[in-house]
Image 1 (cartoon, one colour):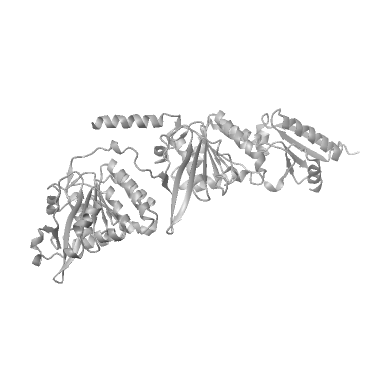
Image 2 (tube, one colour; image 1 turned 45 degrees about the horizontal axis):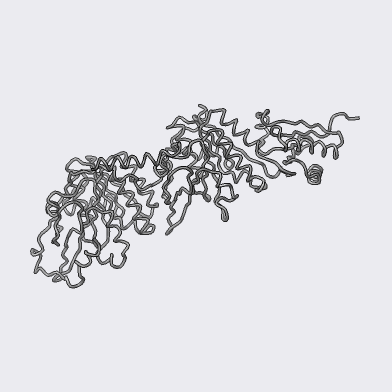
Length: 92
Length: 505
């Protein structure tokens, strides 16, 4: 069995707001749903990681960045729209 | 009495400027029409179409902050790459790279690459706040520019972002930073995105209009919370000196009025003006049809000032400087020696070369360097072909006001005759800005053209009411009583001159 995850994600959020909670919750739920547990998700607060946010050119949050596999893919929003989420993630 | 008026005026301007705290922009003319500059620690929205000077104005605001007010500035651009911006402003005589190195300026180029962005649900722009905060804290900035928010969020959902903009404005206020946010002008809303003009404390509109093939930039303050402001449209120009707004001088009363006189350069003309000539720092109009000797009169005025070691600036809009020098030799004036002695300066430009504002700004910059005592504009009617007559008049009024505050006497010539005023009554409005109006005409008697001269008005002095004969010869200009003219026949019945004069004054 290959233990290395096929998918790697960064989720940038801001603070501890409702929208942050929603995004984290939806994101995990959707990824579990689509990719099972075959992924790695790192959650980052832009206020606490300004340098990383700067490097990744983050302006709009929440934003989910697919780092692996390439090409890089970015989805913004609270990830509440599963269909969109799914098609974006699988098509590209 | 005069002192009393001055103190009242001072009180008024104090009252006008004391309303809220302001940050001076250092943009020439802008701080005057806003009574002190932009609202301090608050955001200002600058709207305008493409190429109206939004970016330039913002940049000028920042650079002035660094250079003159010791306030560091952040420039966040969403349009141009930062190095492109620096190049664009490199002919500004300021080493922007150096300022960036010294941590006085901070440039950042932000963009959302639209192609890689997918939306799923609600979002906000907290990430932008982090970026701005980082930039502001890095150099301890007091001024910030966000150049065109429209561009940044072009493809994002506007309804969702409207609230975010509001948040941004409030956030900027909390940060205690004076901000300029630029936005494209829209068709339905003021801004293209319907960006909340309600949240901005100050909204400035920039336009660039083409009138008679000549473009003119205009600036207007649409709103300014908690402050008085002038609300007209003001012409402004952008050149390598920066941005200049042309306001009508605001405090007319604060002129120093001089009782000194300056000779017209022609003894017999001085005699018609109370024997002493014009008042220093007033405006003189010499008008008449073609070939009546307007330029010659102006040349005598220039000569007399140069001889008295005064400095004279001659702005020629019709003939080149060399041509004027040559032509004036024919009536016995050698202007060249005054050019050599640095008493006489020429400004020569085709009126069509640029718009009026630019002409006047160029002249203004010469004035600032050379500090002339006298200015001659020959002729202003050539400028009137460029732009609407009313535009020219208001520009001239502003310009003359400016000269008056500097106590510079100005003489301008114009191809306006009594007859042309009847045809084109708008010419008449010129009268209000003229202190002394000299009219020259030529009339035909016995197959010979004779010149006549009279003074239509001359504020503040008893002046001659006579119509006199006026002769230009190789020896110069002389003015006689009319009966010295051959046969003394004036075709007075051709039109009723005195009635026409009565209409004008």
